[in-house]
Image (cartoon, rainbow, N blue to C red; front, side, top):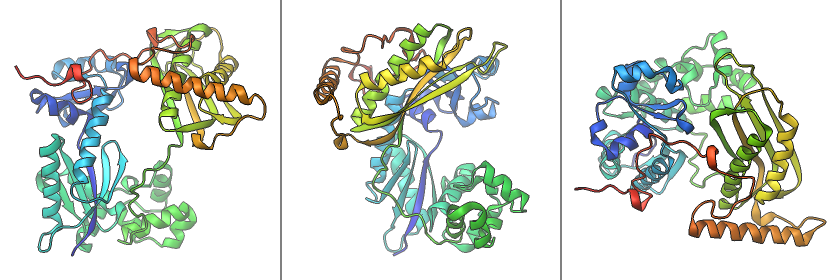
Length: 421
């Protein structure tokens, strides 16, 4: 029985989620915005054709949006996260060997029935995912994960010719696709490596495949050697069915309006740390390092300033109160008056399982009290709604993320489910 690895990638995922519940958007240019309705983070093919740029601030694309009748939506992460879960569950109907790589991408083991081709099986997977979830996907099929990513890239770029599925299990097909793939588009080859390879005369993925593996290893370490082997059809990256543990938790936002005072920044950091610590406890982790950062806007003629401060903790903790205390100390170190700040955020890193927390050398009673308080606060907020109980400094108010153009949370909020009249 023939087997291979499939790289499954949802097409324009955020836009596809919006279209799944509003068919009037089909064929129309659509974009999705970042937090606080700032920059464009997802575009339909029609929006791309209209010249709407990825990452462009909405205020700079206003004319294009109006001229081409672009539908603009705020990010709806509750909807996107739930639709991602549904897509992954649909893939698991075909095989238990599914590696969730990101919110819109996965690798899976493809094992068609006897007499069925890998391409036919891939088309079946694609059709059923579309029928079960409403999300269109592209599937690249190959002997290795790296080659399957190359196949997916070509399947997505030539939908009419491939019908969204491309099989690169044959050597001649692999060679042809690799010749047409710039080396910088190979999975695992970043901009720095791409520049170095181009300078050495390696322009295409085929040239990288045929390069001397020892030469590549000297310049790209063992990672580069694995990429070469994967391009040659030798699997070096097995499917990882157990999700990797989180390495950090970040919460940051751009403000709706600039702020100047330290008091306002303290409120913002208080809100963001509250959210980050909630996520930390949700995943049963604790942090041993806290970073806080602030930035002015990158646009305009105002003076620019940005800085960050990191505190390494003697003992890891999951307490909002303790983590916030360190973040505010860092904020006071980096704050400079006279600037108009546009963004702030916190990062919790050096994470360990919360079960591994030990009592502090001094103040064991306070340590236990803090943990009981956090558990009680999380339970109250779970039952009665977010921020029913919160720290005094964490006043949501103006720091709440703007979702002025957000669609309904059709699948996760009972009051916003789709209704037919």
